[in-house]
Amino acid sequence: MNILVCLKQILDPEIPARDFRIDAARKEAERGSASLVTNIFCENALETALQFRERAGGTITSLTCGAASAEDVLRKALAMKADAAALVLYDDAGRADPLLMAQILAAATRRLGAFDLVITGRESGDWGTGQTGGLLAEELGWPCVSFVDSIGAVDGTLRLKRQTDSGFEIVEARPPVVLTITNAEHNVPRIPKVRDVMQAHRQAITTWSIADLGIDAANRWYEVADLSIPQKETECEFAAGDTLEERVDAFARRLMEATAAV
Amino acid sequence: MSNDVAVVLFAHPESDRAAAGLAGAGQRLAQQLGGALHALAIDPEQYQPEEALAALVETCHAIDPRAVLLSNDAYSQEIAPRLAHRLGGSACGDVVKIDVEPALSRLESAGWRAGATFVTRQVYGGKALATIALKRTPAVLWLRARSFEPGSVGEVRRLQVRPGARTRIVERTRQAQGEARLEDARVIVSGGRGIGGVEGFQQELRPLAQLLGAQIAASRAACDAGWVPPTLQVGQTGKKVAPDLYLAIGITGASQHMAGISEARQIVAINIDRDAPIFKHCRFGIVEDYRKVVPLLRQKLEAVRR
Image (tube, rainbow over the protein chains, first blue to last red):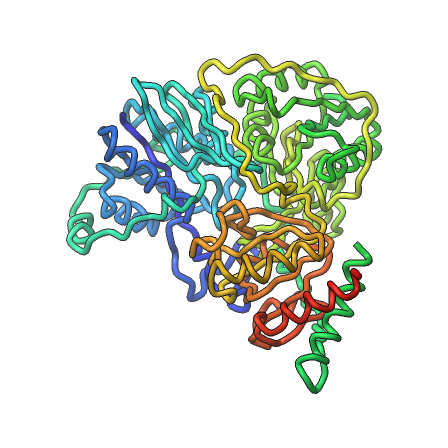
């Protein structure tokens, strides 16, 4: 099967809260000293696709939309052994209207060829709208299955395992279909080999502007009106006492008061 | 467009806290808009993504609502953006606050016109709070339903969902934990990297949870280590919970974890490190190795029980 995996570059979500700043004018996080990384659910998506390709064959194309720096995401995908890569340049991708993003990705998908599966992460670690996969399915006119963590196929019918609130489900689907991927023990992204990283730097990347895809980003129906850092540090009262016994006693009393109020 | 509000229920508000929060949010929004509230129910056992979506689209076309509200379960999250697309609206998820008029004066002075729906949600893994203006209608929102005051709905309209065609759920497996959903838990005992192994969860945290009538949860580190199943993971890449009491044991409180518990009413921690960020969110805590605290704590709780 031919698979397209959509990836997003985000500000490293591991940066400590004390280093996190906001650009009030742009209503966006300041880059500061933080690194840019591939969104983890997107890497889970690529890993899930790679494992499926190992069993079922086919090709994997990686696609991203972002600033020029987003090329790094594609180089890493190529190093993880995606077959091809395409970049849509758009500086405002981070906090864009999810519908606009889906329109961009759908236009790029059509331009890239025929796919059986289009895969996205379930949400991003920056704006986390969790909408890209679903809206992309609508733009393509395909069905969508969300929160998938592994892909199998029997006689051309996909068997998808997906996570629900209380357990999991098996979903059968006929391609073409859009999937959103969530994390599980078995789709932790692989570490690329050094040789493959070197090789990835020599591979060609198809690059378009959004204008090349016939997309007009001017119409704003979805806007960030306000962005702030919530201040909610509370003063912690530490259990006091000379001995462990006394401290645990004080803690237990407070805990029982708290549970009695529940 | 009407001023009506539709809520999409996968459980009944009388028996499910999330559905009750959803009902409450719907009631208040309908009142604010001066429209009617429509309660639409889908049997989760019959749910199929494409067909549930089609049934909702058909019903919503007839109502022509200003807003459609859903809860934060997997099915709701799956269909909300697609429902918005088909109705010509905008979706937004993980919403904690809805305003139909610009509530912040600085938004008004910035020229926001009335008519947009303003929704507030966490972004950047809980490090920031964003208010987003949705100018297409309807606004299709999935809510952190438990953080909304509960309410009720009148007559519930049940939507029939046809069997799946292009995609079909063929197996539904509930993980045998014999427990209610973590999202519904009122008390949660949660363990992190500091627990040190599966034994800590089995021999210390589980018995403590039982005494407190609590459910067990864990941080990503504990799940990744394989000490507990990934379904118990709380945080940015796991479940978002809203208990009345969250007892964090051996959890440092990185922002990715805090993103999952920001709606908890009270956070309490046991941690060996006084400088652990978790304590910044606690009203009280104890600085001590949990291996020393929990056995004593259990004795005291057992003594009170007797």
